[in-house]
Image (cartoon, rainbow, N blue to C red; front, side):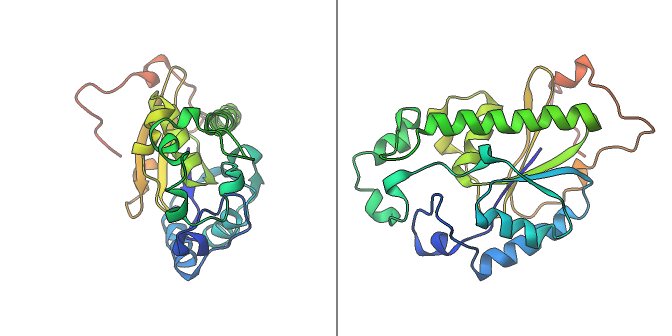
Length: 228
């Protein structure tokens, strides 16, 4: 699974918290989407899914204009409630801010969503999609999900098996790619916050028939992977 964060938005540029508001990509965000599209051309994507928000749809319209895209509500941005549209500098003075930073599993946004609920529904969404795509195309199939910074960070934390209270240590920049391989017993984080690397190593090998998952697929490589 490739996790793509949308390109930079007008809210990102202005230092505001967009949340679920219909903010759009700015000129830099559109350029970022075009650049990541060039990188993705090398990959045979079995499926493309997205958050329903317009900034993700715009990113995919530019990056993968011919792709058939499915909307997944589980990938929508966290519901920040009354925080949405506020400058981050102002929010940093809110009593809830240190909770969001240090104990996000306990953070519930006024009039919005709990961060723990966001993390749970996002992880369930991508795991469900990966299971369906694996069943249809085999365990080596590559697919892409376009979402938002905190959502992607929460999915990565779930894949790493770390508590949500540590997810603020993870970074997901605009138009970055993060690659996770799900196996029968555990996921592997292959790439994180990749904004310019070659993606050729993620192309599955050519096979006459789709390969079934094997017990050894869940084993870590002692000494480290050899790479693509």
